[in-house]
Every structure is written in structure tokens, then in C-alpha cells.
Length: 407
Image (cartoon, rainbow, N blue to C red):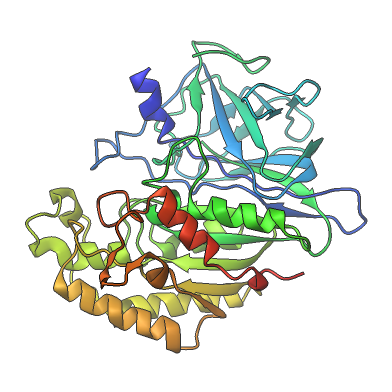
């Protein structure tokens, strides 16, 4: 079981959601997880990327916006060859995690019960009618009959992921790549995509409880009256603006992970602490050695701001609003240095006053200790001075002005 738990922290699912039944229905993203390039050996806390053969995978996801029709988006972004899908099924779960009778749907692809995904390509399933309330949980089953090679995965998984014994177990629950579930939405609906790192990926939050700050935002959006908004969390732990490492850089993955996601009308950009920590932390004896191998040393505020500007311009070209989140404090973490802090202050001053973003989200202020604003306040971080706690993530999620997500 320990091995299965480790694997559950690496698989990526992508999803989208919405409502049907109107002449102007549109697909919006309701749940996502950004795919990662496979790694051949352990990298920090991340184990080597697994592969699968003649296995059924069961992934539990909690969507944000609800709807009446769903579809699954799979990806073979980093596959070594074609990826064969032998069967797929989706089903609604109740509050205890049991399958809700009458909600199981076999998924088809161009009318067929199986599919082959080209190397590097995504694949959409056919839509199926299925009423899915906002904030509900779904189980997604995928049978992979052939050898997948190292999977297109996501290393931070905070909900259940099961691997079957050999064979096709998609028809019913069993004990023991990247995907996207989409639902059809009424006119005026939209998705906010979050381009971010581990602080949005949910490191430090309680597993299985949906307590990341994007989860809090999704709950607040679902509770209010007005337009339907999905939340597409595209955070990757260890991700950076300018350089690859844990996942492609934000500049490299923007098109795939934000601009190509259905229904995106707004984006929250919350990145930079890893650029600064890795860029200036090489001289810090407390910093793990694997960070120094990632490159990007000596990055400046001007470098990161230039990267932000590129992201903003590319998103604006698609009509997407970009909300800039200030970089959170991280003094006390193994990657913190005085020089990195100086660059953070410059970047945050520009975010607040530069006028380039459509709005500013002051996550720095939400996390900061009033007595020492360079640090996260006690109780708001998980103990490492870098990643939030449940309380910290709730405070950040509640700090966001819902007026930014109008009808």
C-alpha cells in the first residue's frame, strides 16, 4: 500500500466542467492538474515517474463548477509513443466516497469504447449527460492495456488514486496520464486558470480534504449567486517563471496549461519564489543539492518582471484577464537568502504599482507575519516557512475579491 500511495502523488488529471440545456452552451474547465515531464530518478521528494501496463487506474477528483454534461480530456504530452486507452468510465461519488447509483457512464471517443492518443497530443472524449453538482467528487477509471512507458504525471496528488491488479476493472469499483473532465456550461460562464507552483498545488494542506487555496476560491464562487465559474488549478510543485525544472517553465507551458483550456476568461499568476530561491540559494548551505542542478542562478527582479510581461501580453491576446499575486514571504525556508528577498521586494512593488496586471492579489500580505513581514506568520505555514497550512490557504483563498469574477 505504501507503493500505491507514492504513485498517487504523481498522476495528473485535467478536467473541465459546466452546464447544458441552452442554445449557447459552452465548455469550461472545472478541475485540472498540469502534466509533468517524466523523471528517471528520485528528485527531492518526488519519486521516479512510473509506467503502467494492463492496469486500470482510478482517480478521484473534486470539480469546482457543476453542470449537466461532462467530457474527459486526456493527454499524452510527454509519452514516448502512442498511448492506448482500452476503456474509460466516469461516475459521481457521494459524501462517503461510494458510487451514486445511476450515475455511471462509459466514455467513448468518436463513438468507440477505446482510443489511441498520438505522442505529444491531447484527446477529448465524447460528451455524456451527467448531472454533477458544484464541488462534487467524481471517480474516473482508465484501462491501459499496453505498456505506457513513463507516464505523463503530476507529482502532488492529494486525493485517492488506485491501481488495479492486471486487467480491465473499469466496470466496477476495485480495491487495490493526464486527464481533463469537461462539462457543458450556460452562456456567460467561465474558468479562472491558476498558473502557479507548490503553494497552489497544495503542499502542506491536509490530504483528501480539498483545503488548497484554489479549493477555497472554488467553494466561495459556488456559494454565491451569479455567473458559473470553474477553477483550473495548474500549479506544479517546484515550477518557475523563466526556467524548466519541475515541469516546463511557465513561459513554455502557458499555451497548453492556460490558453488551450476551455472557457478560460481569467488567470491568476502566482509564481516567482522558486526562481528566487533557486536563483540565489546556491550559496545557502541549507538548500538541498538537487536545487542547484536546476540552473537559473542570479535571476533578477527585472528578469522575472520581463517574464510576467510576456505572459500578460500572450494572455491578453486571447482576451484573458491576468490577476497578479504578490510573491509570498519565505524567510526561514532552506532556499531563502537576503539577496533573494531584495529581489522579491522589487517584484512585489512592481506588481502592486506597475499597472500591468488587470488586478492585484496581495498574497504576500495575507501570509505575512505582522512582526516580521519577510516571514509567513506562525500557524499559516506547514512548518517549513514556505508552504501554507490549511489555515494559511484558507486565509489566502478568502482574501480574493469575488468581484473579479463577475457575470
